[in-house]
Length: 517
Image (cartoon, rainbow, N blue to C red; front, side, top):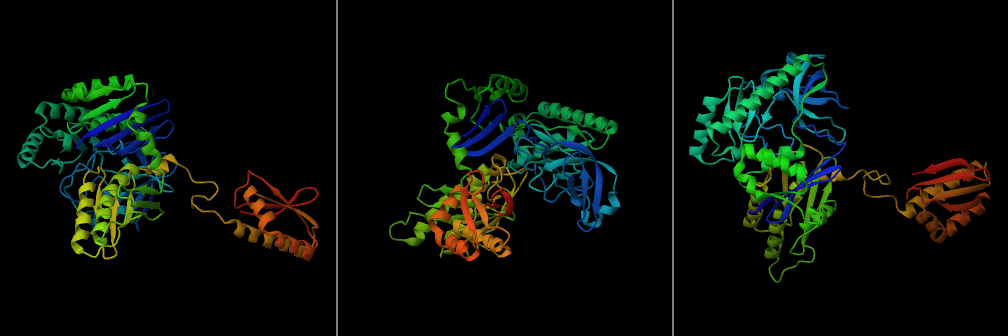
């Protein structure tokens, strides 16, 4: 598989595109004024302890307090054996990994016995604030390097599960057990495979030194305050993703290109010949057709090569993805047609989840298949392509209804949320009242004014589309109201009004009466 990383730098924006076999699979955007917090370490103050939820809210100086669950306190480690917690630069702001051995169960401890309101605590951000929620926090601090993740206060050596060779795993464990400091544990990252003793030693010393600086700064800092900031988008991504599995890294800005070369010269000089400075007059993303692909990520509908399509809908609770055959009907065998469409959809859904950075609960409605073996084949294809995702995913087999339920790690708002804002007309619903519905609301409002009998002349002001609809389609309604209540009704259009908004004014004088929308 061919993999490339493209970095586009502008005055107020940096964009990173990851391509696999010339297809855009990930897009990361860092804009001026839009802060990234994942991986940052804060000295915070416990603002509330909630025994019922076994969680606490911690003030770290942001608009909303961070959420800290009892399982994320420093005394506990998560489940599973070993993992680097997908530290491979998921956005360049991952806090690295966490040892997966369990020291003692958090179920035996009540959070109210550990934390008190007003208590100061060192925490790390693991999830950006999303929608109405504040950031997710952990007391399990981790510092990612290129080859390993350092975890202060942990007595553990782990190896990324993506390193599959048993002999290499054993070598790495033995090596790290010898050189790791007593002050913390480590997890070897995927890039650390076949790395030398000297490289590990240098990185451990650097990360341990960073931790000492953090501790010293935290001791003298007043809560809430930031005591350590994670790497920038490009620095973190180069550190975490640019490896011998990447065929090329192309940058279109000379200063950043030089900065990355200096870093790679120290950590992986053998990869320097894979770097390239883009000098062409045609913009980097244009030359690879990426701008067009970015525009498509904002659309609900995704076309499939077979003629079918996906429809992606995001709601507050989950994201639904519907698979349709569209114009592709095959020749004779309907089951074969459906299977082919579902197989292509499985690959495309996995790509779209990464590209759009969709997180949380996801439900995929594949086209119903009668043959059980076909359902299994589609699911296995989906799992195979999901394995390329750097975010943690968990998918359940195709149900009898043709549904696949899954979850995907959510660290920050989706790409759609980052690049767009709520529509001021429909407030994010995607629909507005129809002209006939607005006309009925206007009719009821005019009847109330007529019944009150205080006004004889009124002006209805509405969006041009509604004003035209009233004049062309609602003449009889307006005439009935004029005769029934002795009202003189004037219609005025206002292009500044929303399509489902209207206002009534008493004439003369334009005194505001009722309005809607």
